[in-house]
Image 1 (cartoon, helix red, strand yellow):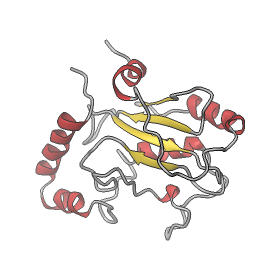
Image 2 (cartoon, helix red, strand yellow):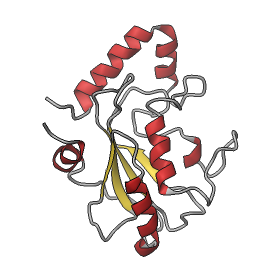
Image 3 (cartoon, one colour):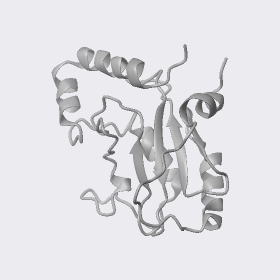
Image 4 (cartoon, one colour):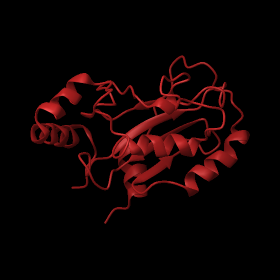
Length: 183
């Protein structure tokens, strides 16, 4: 049986996309060491990280494999880039796996308050937040922070509200088509 870590290393995060024209890739990786260590020792179940280059801590791959819920059985890859302005500015995160989700667009944009510099709900990014908060926040989009009332993907949210069983089938279709799944 393949472990989540092995699946990530061999099937999902084989090559991280290089951030194009993202300002500030010069953040001191040395300053990220304590946060990366803290993040790795506090990972939610079903989450793992991979660094393409262990000496380059400002860009990494996060894979979330939800243990239950609509997206159970899929592996969802996120590229996390820590900008030069961190921790005044939040990390830049993109979902690399196409999925049907009310808070993640099919293009990989993510609606999560803590990834916003300014947030109406007051839960946006703050310099006191850490990389582990980003991981836990992204993970919770597959469970308790799932928001059908203020969606990024309005069509997915309306689909859920109109027909939950049809929504579940479409999520499964996306998992089967776009996500690495254990076979």
